[in-house]
Image (cartoon, rainbow, N blue to C red):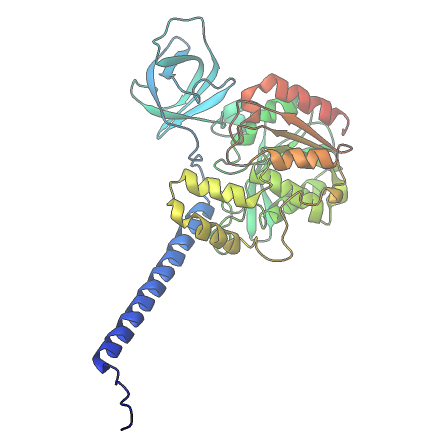
Amino acid sequence: MAPVTPRADTGAVRTATVTAAAVTTTLLGAGAAAIAAGRYVADAALRPRPGRPLPEGPRLSVHAAADGRVALTRSLSSLRPGTYGLTAPGVHAVVGPVLTDVPHAPDTVVRELHAVTHGSLDPGTRVALTPQVHLGNPGTALGLDHADVDIPGELGALPAWFVPAARDTWVITVHGLGTGREHPMVVMPFLHRHQLPVLDLAYRGDLGAPVSPDGLGHLGESEWRDVDAAIRYALRYGARRVVLHGWSTGAAMALHAAERSALAGRIAGLVLDSPVLDWHTTLRALMAARRSPAVLLPLAIRAAEGRAGLRTADRRAPGADPGALRVPVLIFHGPDDTLAPWEPSRRLAAARPDLVTLRPVRDAPHGAMWNADPAWYEEALRRFLTSLV
């Protein structure tokens, strides 16, 4: 008698098939949701936020403010040396060094209070330190004669402030992440004293400037072309050469311009403050600072690099080829910058000691190298610029 082959239980097979399909659909759905969430996080990190400071450092409570002093919650942030803005919704003030020889509670820090420029520092107000010291424009904030000018850019007119002076080498200042063109005003009085004209640029995504076609920032990868437009404007209106002074992504834009602009031969030198030279780390820090879920960070970073055009084969981070440098470079950067690590700045300086000078700054967050010690910063800047003008 021939052996009998057992027949499969068709009901069980059908159930297993349906279960497998459901699991596959669930996994695909979860994967698609994760990708969509990653892209959302990426867009949130890249979207320009004019006038909104970076989410770096804790909020501090004002305990008291009177007689040129302000008492703040004691923390590593409130103990930082130097001069800073103090900001909250509807409030801006300027604080100076920590005062150690005045009576204060153990949980507070007392700093010099230079000015309350907007609002009031009422007890209980939650504030944060910011590198932006001045509000307004060069006239209202600093008493400097200036002109509001429009620079023709590829996306439209770019607003800028021009502060005239006698020399024919102009300084083009370019702000970075979390700030606007008010931030570079910290160096305007110094530059004006040394008779250097200043062109302070607002670029795509800034208030009053054109928006990038995709509505996103690109960490300098596309924005550098607005710096190129500013160089053309300066040369058209009397500059013989220019110095580019950039902070954060503005420093990345300055490097890109020196590497790519057809007018690179008219650039006399670069001043880079807290330069963003490592896209990957900066994106991760931006997303983490905005409390993006850790599980989404790898997807979000890849999405952001793709959205910003940083993953194409012909895209390299600014300064990635030290041999491409052709002009003197002064870098202000330090190990306490958690948004743009300073190791790439150290590598760049080590690779081109003939052109690059690195001035290490401690106890200063991103974009705040001037704030940590204004007099020291300006003396280093004076020595650098003297050889260029």
